[in-house]
Length: 239
Image 1 (tube, one colour):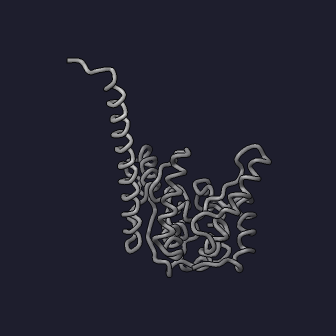
Image 2 (cartoon, helix red, strand yellow; image 1 turned 135 degrees about the horizontal axis):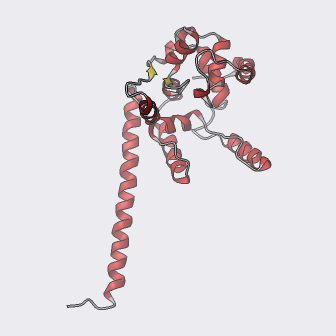
Image 3 (cartoon, one colour; image 1 turned 180 degrees about the horizontal axis):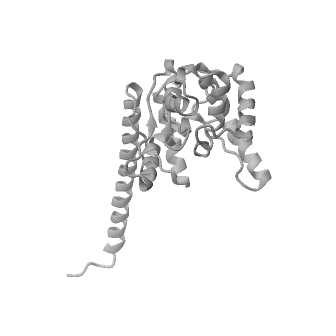
């Protein structure tokens, strides 16, 4: 028995609706998964991040026994100098926005348009934390949309103090070096609590390309950028 021609559009429409419904449910489930992990991070420290795992996988291609340098420390055990330096370098209006610095975005778009290529970004600390915790290194509009959603959840679930604490403990500061404590010990041989203003400014200066700088690999560029950060640190607002 064959179906009438008039029934095929109905079947196709039903198939489309089922597929769309399944897609929507999948997206909602993924967002709930992210939200669950963010709620976990409100009270507990993450053992690892998506970015750390990718880096470890890459390192183990060359050395199967490779390990990351990482040691979690609470917010109080991180020098106020590093907190100020990172805010100055990465997100000067950290306390004033809700995850997105629209002024910085506008300025970056204007600069990129005038140069005819991407030369400036405007990612906030919250956006960078969203990317480090959960996302791949892929660059696409879909990933940016997911980053924005996670950023919104972070800002509406966690305090600014907790967001900065998480970021300082998961940021990369060298090849396989993650977090303020490991960075301070690796580059300067001191705990994160004892970082001097000049040392903190240099660590903040290398955040955009941390794997470029091995222990003792101070360059004229990093020193110049660190000097600018150092001069602006006294005016930085931190939670």
